[in-house]
Image (cartoon, rainbow, N blue to C red; front, side, top):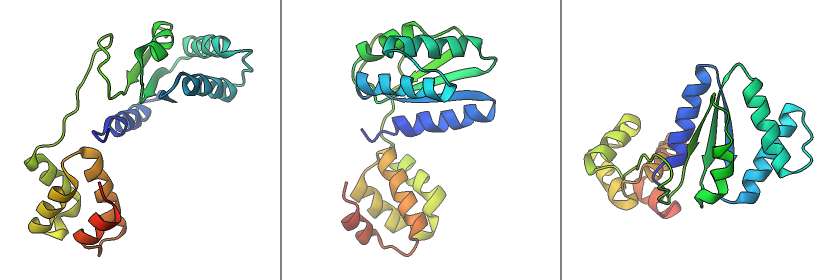
Length: 174
């Protein structure tokens, strides 16, 4: 974890919403949570599904009848088999993104990698240039180059701009 898969999907979803796309976020780290999410979507649509299979059918029917673009994000998938039935039944106008830390050869993949030293520093400088070059280097050494860790640090320093690097590292160990 920590590569920023969910954050990247969230950013993409945010951009899609701006162009009139309906985004359905589905916590997918277990089949039970996927089923629960589909049930919740049914309730939002005003349906009362009889069972899990019926929930998927009702959601797909609503997608088919919608005049909007639909994006489903299956976040933190553990096994392809958990999402396969849902992906196989998606109506044509729907698109799906699957985030996972595992290799799922059945799906087209975009692999996220840690930032290089230069990329990590540039990313931090965009938000935290006021803390200085030496402190940025110290922070990168302490927390690494994983996008998620850097993003978290930015959030903390934006909220507490007077916090020192060593305080941050002690308070938020990686």
